[in-house]
Every structure is written in C-alpha cells, then in structure tokens.
Amino acid sequence: MRFFLVASMVVLCFLGISEGGSLRKNFYRDSCPQAEEIIKNITQQHVSSRPELPAKLLRLHFHDCFVRFNNEPKWEVLTGRRDGTVSKSSEALINIPSPFQNITQLRQIFASKNLTLHDLVVLSGAHTIGVGHCNLFSRRLFNFTGKGDQDPSLNPTYANFLKTKCQGLSDRTTTVEMDPNSSTNFDGNYYPILLQNKGLFTSDATLLTTKQSKNIVNELVSQNKFFTEFAQSMQRMGAIEILSGSNGEIRRTCSVVN
View 1 (cartoon, rainbow, N blue to C red):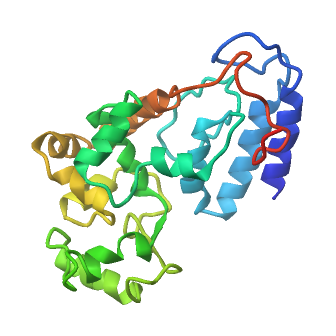
View 2: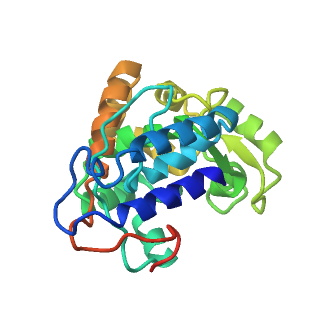
C-alpha cells in the first residue's frame, strides 16, 4: 500500500509541470527532482519481500515509472506520459494479446501497434517471471479439441505435472509458474523451456509453429541476446500511442479519471 501512496504523492508533484513538451529523459527534473529516486527505492523495498511483484510491475512500463530490478535487463524509460481521459476494460481486452491466441492473431495485434514479429517473440520472454491461472491453459490439458483430449504439442511429462496442479477446466484460483522453477528470476530460461514444448499458454506454444518465429526463439536462447533485445522491444512498446504535452491528463488518483 505504501508504494501506491508514494506514487500518488509523486503524481501530485507532477501537477506543476508545463503543458508543452514530449517524452524525454529527466522530464521531472525541475518539477519533482526526487521522483525517480522515491519510486525506485520504494519499489525495490517491496520487491525484496514480494518476489511476485516484478511480473505485475512490468505493466507499469506504460506509465511514468522508473522501475529498476536487481536482475537484468535494464532500459531507459523516457518520461512525460500523461493518462488518458477514458478508461474502459472492454478496450483493454481488445488491445491486450490473449493467452489463447495463435501466431496469426498475435502478429495482427502487434502489427496494429507497429510492432514486429521479432518484438512479439522477444516480449513473450516476459513470461520468464510470474504465474498463470489454470483456466488460462486448462483447455490444453483436458479438452483441447472439444473431445476431452490433450494438446499434442504440449510436453507429455509437463502436461502430467500440470494436471496435478489444476483441478479441471473450471479451476480459476490455482496458479502455476509460467517458467518452471525460475518464476521469480528474470532470466533467459523461457526460451529453452519453450523449445522443450513446455510453454504454458497457447500464445507461448504458437511461437514454435512458424519457421520465422522459431528461428527467433532459437536466437534468444542466449540470455545476453535476450536481455539486449528485450530492452529494445520494451522501449518500442513504451512509445505506443503516447499522450504528452496538452493531450490527456495527470490523474490525481491513478485508477480514476479526474
């Protein structure tokens, strides 16, 4: 809770900035010079005691945050973004890739945001941390084609393990590591696991269904390569449909339009 209280205080500090300008480094240097340090310190404090937080905090990349974890990779986040004046869950569902989608559907969504297949495969590597709810992949275990069957592309040993965790198609509460035995470490383990056919979601497994996407997966088995490419793709994703200058607003409460 303290993290969000501090974040709200920083937002109030931002209210003094000018209307002009665009994204840039040190955007809040004059209006709130301690903003980055405050958020960095509080975030690290909470992450150290709650290792599941980094996966959730990755979502904050779309906003004015300055999160730096102890693990690599790191990238420079240009600041100056403003919040939208409309917030609809239905729009979020349309624009956010689904764990049920295949490679064609995912490519279309990424292309609509001017992101490439390479960005798609690289950003999927964020599944190296965090957990997934059973209902997001249980169809692959219990009813893949509607005949009570299992997804043949799923590693059989891994599938049997998942069945010991998930109670059935209706299990909406149980969670499973997206990156087995490494879900709290941001590392390059996602891609070797994927090549063993242990991708948890359909959206993971589908990355192996075309030659082009599978080639990218193989390239990213190198952790250093993944870290470099992930940072670059995150920067490109952070530039999607930004609001700056006089567009949008600075919310007094992050979850509510002013």
